Length: 101
Image (cartoon, rainbow, N blue to C red; front, side, top):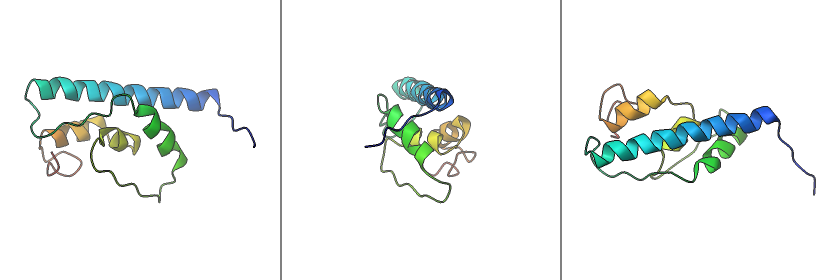
């Protein structure tokens, strides 16, 4: 079996993405605990590496489907943290105009 290697830059990119995902999820957990975000809150903490690596293997035309625990997926797809947070607050500036929050 051929050994696959990745560059230092790739590892650093994954690390940065995973840190963004983790901090975002931690903030969501805090806001949910303060009852500022309503509904259900399924966190992705501890699984960030899956999204970071998977998203880097996809091409632009690929589609993904999630059921829940999808904040990290949205970040991995390039949706801004501001748009996702606005969505969780039910704001029209959210990534689906507040309908999913």
